[in-house]
Length: 129
Image 1 (cartoon, rainbow, N blue to C red):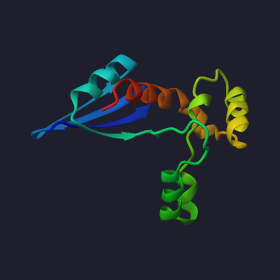
Image 2: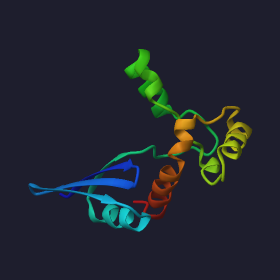
Image 3: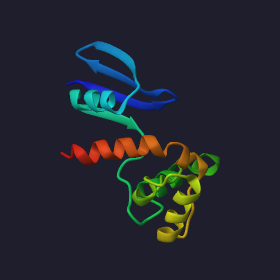
Image 4: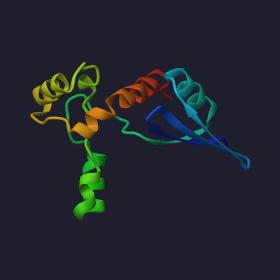
């Protein structure tokens, strides 16, 4: 079984794969490269929020994780943007959309990775199943 790990980085994505004892890593710079690798593997571990909500700011999985890690680490689990805010051209507009639906604004941390969140959301939506 070919397994891969994907994490966002400054120039794109870091991709690590394991297949029958063969380990490989590479940096992916485009959405097309990410999609190609995503389709090559049987199991993926992805360090990016998935399963976005359309109208709820706090996903149940995030709330449970905050409770589990507790204390000062709970702030490390941030809420990703709701799906309608992904296409906003600016942080201000994304906050307006988020507030309209949820009465909460986005964290700057969440906004800064919104392009990557959208890329992964598009990929998963396109290749369901």
